[in-house]
Image (cartoon, rainbow, N blue to C red):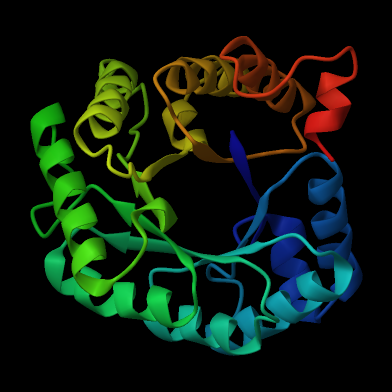
Length: 263
């Protein structure tokens, strides 16, 4: 499972202060610790921590790149902020997070991903919002893959996010997402795109967030989930994710498998 580390985000108070004070040490420490815990990408999100989000994104990317060699996920709903991050990327693998499944949006973001040899997270939502059934989400996923082929973006670089909603909003959501992932892997299989979720959404508003996140992640992995945006500093959730990969025969077992998977 590809762990995309979520903590370099302006929504967190320590990162917000670091952005505002240009405290590189805080950001570098987070980059290094998340890498040590097994992050395969470091998600970078300015959020509302700076008035000039483009300058803040450039600064964050440069600090992270100076701290470690881990690939970066540029996270913003604003194209200029994504472009600002891409301008200072040093050639390591990069992910763009994210774009909706609206064809007009895909026509803008997919050429950018091709230009920068980047992976692209695409959400199964369109101008009508988030579909409330499995079929429409799979249809949007099919549109996303079709657009990738049209623009020459390798489908294996496409990460489809079926959008998991809080269990407090709709308790059937986890089962819906399991089925969407299963169908994506079955229908769009030559080659299949990857799947990803913003895991913490499932537990918003609950009293048992770590337990719900951990259990949901294992469920989704069993249905073929490839990646998740998670708190890699949560040892329990990382141990569960790695152990699931072992039991699903995706990585080789050894007595040191937890340590090996984090290297």
